[in-house]
Amino acid sequence: MAGNASGLPSKEAADEAKAAEVTSAVASAGDASGSGAGASGGTGAEASSSTAAENLSDYDTIVPRLIVFGGNGYVGSRVCQAGLAMGAAVTSVSRSGRPRNLTGAWLDSVEWVQGDALDPQAPWRGMLKGAAGVVSTLGTFGSNALMYRVCGEANMNVMDVAAEAGVPRFAFISVHDYKFPAGWRAQDFLLRGYFQGKRDAEAHMAAVYPTGGVALRPGFIYGTRAVGTTQVHLGWVGAPLKAALSILPTRSLANIPIVGAGFVPPVSVEAVGKAAASAALDPSIPPGTMDVWQIGKFA
Ligand SMILES: NC(=O)c1ccc[n+]([C@@H]2O[C@H](COP(=O)([O-])OP(=O)(O)OC[C@H]3O[C@@H](n4cnc5c(N)ncnc54)[C@H](OP(=O)(O)O)[C@@H]3O)[C@@H](O)[C@H]2O)c1
Image (cartoon, rainbow, N blue to C red):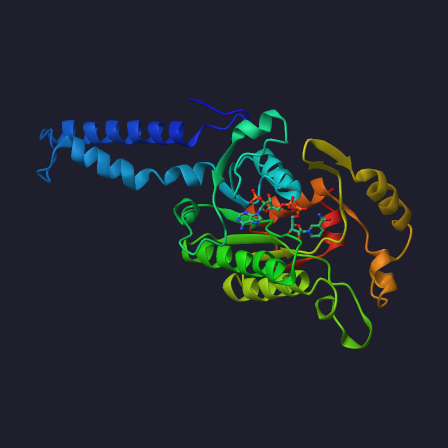
C-alpha cells in the first residue's frame, strides 16, 4: 500500500484497497449464488461500487483524521507534527495553505487546504465528516473588532460546523485566565477583543461540545518561531524563565492579582502542540479547560 512520509497509508491508497476488497467480496458472493449480477438484479459493478462507497469511511476507523485550523502557524505546525507522531492523518485549513517559511519532511505528510474559517459557506465543511477531532489555533492581534472576529467568531463558527458534521472531539487554543483585583478580568481593559473572544469561544465550546471539548489555556508559549524567513528563538527567554519558576509554588502565586501574571509558567510550543493533538484525539482527556500546569505535563 502506498504510504506517505510519516509511514501512514495515504487515504487514496486505503480507499483503493478497501474498494478492491469489497469488489472481490461482492464478486465471490455473486459466484457463490451463481447469479453473477446478484439477486438484486443490478449489475455487479453497481453492487460493488455502492458497497465500496459505503465502506470508504472505514479509512477513518483505521487511521484517525485530525483537522487543524491554522496548521501553518507557530502552534498549529507543532499540532500537525504531534498528530502525525500519534498516527493520525492530518489536514490543515488556513487562508494561505502550505507554509513557505517552514521546512521538514513532515510538511509532505500534511494535507494543506486553503480556506477561511470565517467563510459563512464553510467550503471546508465536507472534510470534517468522519474526522476524529479538530484543533483550532485561530487567533490574531489587531483592532479589538478584528481580534474578536478571529479569536471569538472564527473559533465558534468552526465549532458549530464540526459539531454538525459529527466530529466527536474539539480542542482550541485559548489563553491563561490572568487574575485582577476586585473581580476585574483581562477583557475589561486589556486587548479586549482578544480576551473576550477567547472567553466567549470557551463558553460556546462548553455548550456545543459538553463532553468532547477542551480549551487549552497557555500563557507565554516559547520555542522557535518563523517570522518571514527569520527564525526567532523565544526559547532563550522561555526555557530559563520556566526553570527559574519551577522552584516556586506558581499555582498559588499566579492567583495574586496583577503581579501573579509574572508567575504563570511559560510552556514550550512542542508541549502545546502535543497537548492539543492529544485533547482532540484521546477520549480519555476530560472536557473543560487545560491550564498551563496541565499543558506542561506534555513536555
Ligand atoms: N504565541 C503565544 O505565545 C500564545 C500564547 C497564548 C495563546 N496563544 C494562542 O494560540 C493560538 C495560536 O497562536 P500562534 O502564535 O500559533 O498564531 P499564528 O502563528 O498567527 O497562527 C494562527 C493561524 O491561524 C490562521 N488563521 C488566522 N485567521 C484565519 C482564518 N480566518 N481562517 C483560517 N485560518 C486563519 C493563520 O493562517 P493564515 O494566515 O494562512 O490564514 C495562522 O496560521 C492563537 O489563538 C493565540 O491566541 C498564543
